[in-house]
View (cartoon, rainbow, N blue to C red):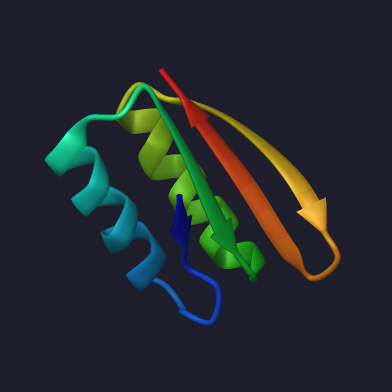
Length: 67
């Protein structure tokens, strides 16, 4: 799981890129706290072959990336 809350873009995307390149997970959970990060992580994940589902938890967003 990547907890990218408190970071503004592009940091959350860079964190996800690093994890994908290192371990190429079949599933990855990402926590973010702003809409810009949701959009950018979702865009990157889609271009990397992941399906993304999102749930809102108060002011936070939980993204689940699955291959």
